[in-house]
Image 1 (tube, rainbow, N blue to C red):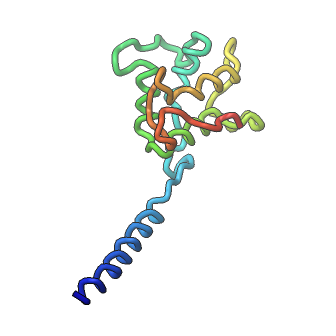
Image 2 (spheres, rainbow, N blue to C red):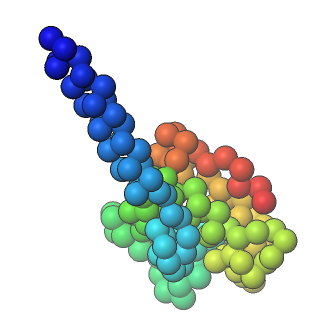
Image 3 (cartoon, rainbow, N blue to C red):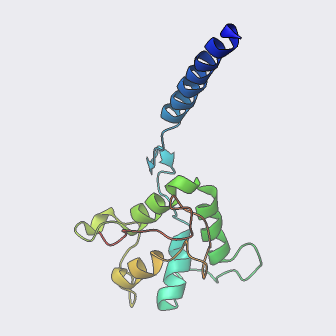
Length: 145
């Protein structure tokens, strides 16, 4: 009986150490080129411009083939990003207001960047791509930076 009670604390300690080691080894890195592609959500530019301003930026007709529409391609990129990096991908995509060059989005003729930024903030929501994020919900908080 004494040996059984001495094994329990040792087993508990081993399990706890394993859990903590696994948690620290899998830290979420969500930077362009580390955890995210170099240009995250590049495929979303067409969808955002189309939805915001009704224009195509590709220079060719926009595909309406199921699975190959701008929305489908954008949502696939979001889905392919790990759940804990999706909001950071959107944040990188829209850039910072204080640094216009930090955005993947560009001012286009008849389509300023600000409305594109506003639309891109809702890409993860149920009305669009409906993907879970780091918040365990299809929403990103704190994108107004």
